[in-house]
Figure (cartoon, rainbow, N blue to C red):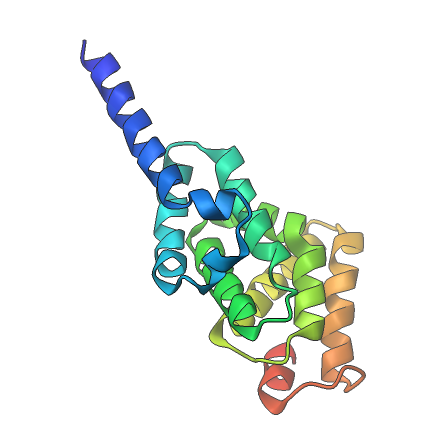
Amino acid sequence: GSVELEKAAKDRQIYHLKAEIAPLLKGADEVFLDGSLMASLPEIVGQLAGYDEQRTVWTILHRLSSHLINDQAETRVQASTALAEIIGRLPSGQQSEVIGTLSDRLIAWIKDEELATPAYEKICIYLKDFVQTMIHQEHYIDAIPILDVFYQIDSGLLEKNDRAHAIAS
């Protein structure tokens, strides 16, 4: 009946979405230099999340966050831009879960990144919002590492350009 047809259509759509991002799911580094794929990634992730493909969504989030620390500036920019865009499209509760799960990688990237890109600013804002949520919920231990990196940047302990310094303040 129509339920089977809907399920078949959904399964086909999921299959096509996963096929589009197969190189990323398999861990191929060159995918980060494919500008069109990286630009379409937030939309693809949104569709996968809508189909409740959480495992695939988390795989993508982990792949992106693992490439924030990379010798290639272009790879870091593409990974951070896609990650910031994906996080920005999530409902606030899910945003907190993602930021909390990826916070160690995000903090390391904020510390080391030399380019104060729009994605850098967005991710700093997400981290600041997460800190406020953690403090409001009295989960101080989760807020401390993030507050520490912003303190280090703000106080000059971590050398950053003026733009990054302003974002962290």
